[in-house]
Each structure stands twice: as C-alpha cells, then as structure tokens.
Image (cartoon, rainbow, N blue to C red; front, side):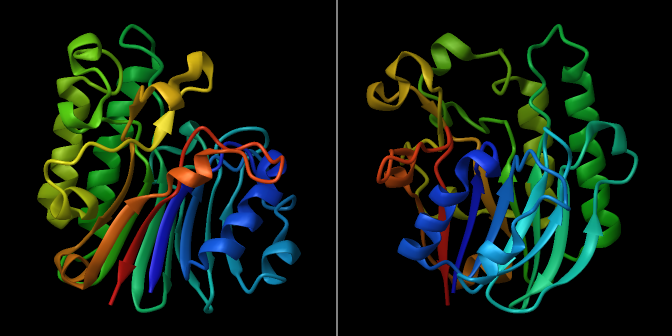
Length: 257
C-alpha cells in the first residue's frame, strides 16, 4: 500500500498537476493540504474519474485539507477543537485499515508576529487531540505540512536559520511531544543521517541550489512503522510536468506492507 502527503499550494491552480501525479504514482491513500477552496468547490468528479473518493475540509481562499482514498472512507474528525479561528487544518478518516489524519499546521510567519504563539497553541491542541481521540496502540498515520524543521539536518542552513521560524526550540519541543505520544517519523527512522527536503522557495533558484527544508512528514504509530518498506520525497514532482507548474512542496510517500 502506498500512502502520501502533499501540500499542493492551491487545488484550482494545481488540479491537472495532481491528477498527473496520481496517474504516474498510483498512491492508495493521500493527505492533501492548502486546498484554498471550499467543500462545495472541490472537484470530486475529477478524482472519482481516477479512482479516488475524497473527504474534504475546505476554506475559501485559504488553508483546507483533504484525503483521497481508493477505498471507502469514514470521516472521524473535521477540524481541531478550540482552534476554529485558525481555519480548516485537520481532517481524520478511517480507511484501508488505518486511522489517517492530514494536517496543515499554521506557518507562524515570524517570532514577533501574533501568529507565532497561535502556532504553538495549535500544536499543543494537536497533542491534546491525539491523547483524547486516538490510541497509539492502533495503526494510525498523522501526515501533512507541519511547518517545522525538527532538527538541524532538516534545514539547508541551520547555521543561518537557527532560532528563526521553523527552527525554534519551542516548535521543535512540540514536534517531539507528538512523537512522545506514540508516533514515529517514518522517513527519519529509516534514514537517520540522510538530508532531504520537501519544500523549496519559488524564489532565487532555491530548488536547484539545494536551499530547502524538510517540513512535510508521514508520522505513524509503531505498528505502521513495522509495515514501512520505504519512504521518499518525490522530487520529480517539484518540477514542471508537461507545462504544468508544480507546488513549492514535493509529495512525500511511503510503501507499507
């Protein structure tokens, strides 16, 4: 079974690109982030034509998350309790024998911005949500754009960016708390010393210069980790395809037994 997570940076602008990827990679289960459209605007028919059912939590012009599955899915949670003001950022479903949650963590902007403490509070409530709504003894995946570099290896320049947004002790502490609940970073568990990135700024040739960050993750409980055969960042889909413009994020995929 192939699972994936991908911040698509606007589904209206990227629909044909996403469909191109689905056709090429044939994932079974996908968490999408940053839809930037409402539930009513979501193109269900286009995905159904490619064999996918979709559950959505949309928002006009901003945020928005969805799950695509080859099999029927049952929605468990739409939104994060106490964080409604931060927008459509969490969706949980049951499908294919997994509890599968996709999230789009607030960016935080910069340390002096009011959104930074809001980001930390959102992450605190995410940990509380795990404790109240999920069981680490069951097969569960938490995936998405976390907007955090958990360790220096996950940044193109820790020396330059240490202490700045995505690289703060406060953000990293909250990421560790998610893992302490009972999740494992599926990529880092298999490749503890490998530096790869999942996001590159559109500006300044960052992708070609290797100036990226690893901020998109597939986290799984122990039973999911035990089934994991491979994990990779699909760099090919950070590049244009057939004239279609890519997101600034690449998909992250894992193969499970």
